[in-house]
Image (cartoon, rainbow, N blue to C red):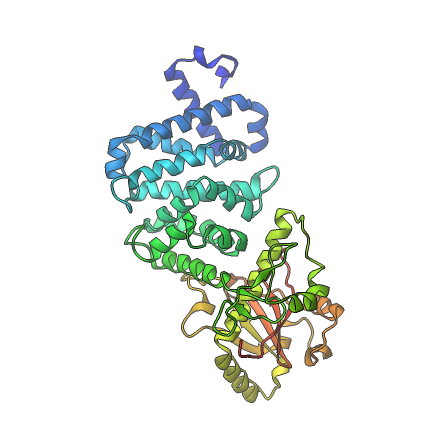
Length: 445
């Protein structure tokens, strides 16, 4: 580290190797404040440039391209790539450089001769670990912490997100998988909740979307993919399919469809919400104007898009399974001696321990139970039985919702009343439950 005072041209290649290896070790273990105060940024940048240069050399290595294996020197360089994202300071610099682009091209080189060729198991594990450590650093350790959307957007722009999905299909030994499984589960759940990323970057024709479909169709990735990982990727794909369903925010017509062959119109101001006619847009304006802005920041736009996706997803679920929901509601009410207006329906769109999404199973898994089971206190609000729901009543109900996470996973909660559904998602926009009203009565549309 004392070499920091000398110009690069005066440092021998052997000393550079020692210097870079030492910084790599320090990055894995040093306190962030001490690291920043005691190692000049130019030294970290020099180390980063060195690591990127070695990655580019490995990318052209014929042994790597043909076998997916590295010699011990190559493994040493990959070790330094891992060190790069185990400390907030170099990790931030890595995102500002072409580190992740170089890593993506390194993996992609394996596809030159065979489109589905992957790195070996140990190298795939190292690459997956690099990505989820980068995710952990960016979202929890950076001086200005990144949102999930920002991280996935940055990763996708480098081409690394699709390569991460490919490496994820390679099975690991049980000990290694169990070690990183908790962070991986959180990361995949956050990806699933990033509706803006899914709707834009995983749609048909987008690189991530095509890679995901190829993996699920068995045309890419490892044929030995773990069932749990396959189910999680399949769940993401199903969410993208549902998100592509557009519906009128006011009357909930989906378009284009047999009953409504026209395409829906998008709000010219926020460019997110859709309507089937000017009449519906005008009727909904009182509510929509509270969130509709032409110059929304990225977070606000993401929140609104997520909200619209949740609404569309739940309406689609209700329309698709209405008869089953109605029969289950009647049987449960009869068994408990309660009215439907006293009941709630719980739908879980988060993956369970096997990676499956209960709402997407066949038949779908949902639960109908007394509303008071979900509320603080035993009294059910009077307005539940009325169609006219004042805004302050919804706010009051929000404040009384219990913290509820079955199996440690976020869920959606719907309250049935007078032909309506009050939707209370626990998949947070801001970490808190919230309510909406949606017409659940089946129509010709």
